[in-house]
Image 1 (cartoon, rainbow, N blue to C red):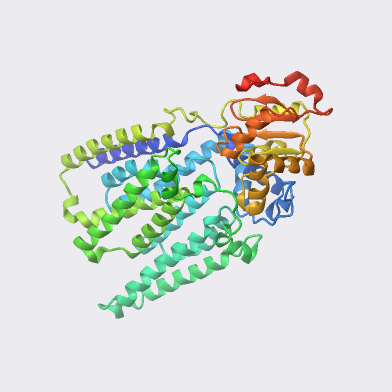
Image 2 (cartoon, rainbow, N blue to C red):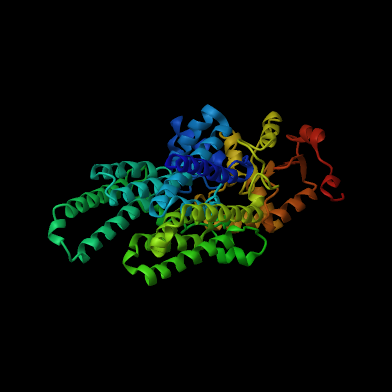
Length: 529
């Protein structure tokens, strides 16, 4: 019977991972993501040009603006994978890595409760965990959050020897150079340290018996914490890099969806994201679980889980980019709280567990399917598969084949795409790094150029633009206004447009032959001459 249940558990786990994978297996639209720039970062760094680390390397508008390339290590890894297996390889890597990360948290949730509860909670939380499906450096933060948490949890349970704690500072160095959330490495260690110290300070029984074991173990954890804090200096930026997570938003002149709060996005009413409601439901369930735990079994109240819930719950509310980490931590936290609340009642008869598991899982999967279908391959938003979407590189190929020359005026979204395909021959007007440009640049130049014809003419005189290159699905009001004006502007000719990008060339002798051959009539855009 045990072997049969084990086999059933493995099958259920495979199905659960497949369910998670459905949210992740979609092709990449490189014109609206950062991935192209990350891959190019890796290539440039491995070629020995380290200017990409601390300057606005790809821009001709603010080339001397100081930059902290805090995720440069991710670019090296992405470039290495891309060089071996292309964008399909990157998609596969992201998928498998995401499943490994999920498994870290699932296993702890299973150990804190039981297999059925972990599966049920996972089915509910997976859409929230899958909020971030693009191939981004933050995947490494999720990995290290999971690995640190897994190691510290097993150490606390006495299942991992103290010597393994000293791997954490080494891992911290890798984390430090791959994503800005490295600050949560020392924070996690510190959280476990405080909890263990609290147990020691409030222990009144058998304190003498604990002196020979706990203080030594606690000392080792404190030593590992100290080394991990020191390790945050081990980047090309030293102390500046170590404190950069606290400074990045000081000069952040462009609003992006992922950094907006739940409250803000719900107020917009133009963004359909079922995870906004799911987040609020999960957060409410978390709060309720802690209240119930205090009522039913206050002695089992977990300090570390309360802090993790509060921190990631707050961060999730402040920026939806944190939904994934919040969902991952909610899994073991809810598992633990439910186990402590239900106690002996958790041990139901085998047939009751199976029936409850079956009906509730089916219910959750159906509800999730109908509320999140657009985020699955079954929907119409993204194309199922690995690698780039079909024809995603056509505008760049056209640009190169026609030997089009800059300077380029481009929109924010497509910056990473242009960097990937056109660097080093062409530099960009701007790209999708708000921290790499001044606030005044975005407000007084980039946005103003699209909103105000006088600013546009002034910038054209300064830079003598030869090309306008836009990802025309840019939904910002200034981008749509600007594109309509350029279609009706006799000084510019649209010569390329596909499902991803549009290219205008200035009417001059340099571009005359290309315009004569490829100009798109205005009536194709629903406009008259």
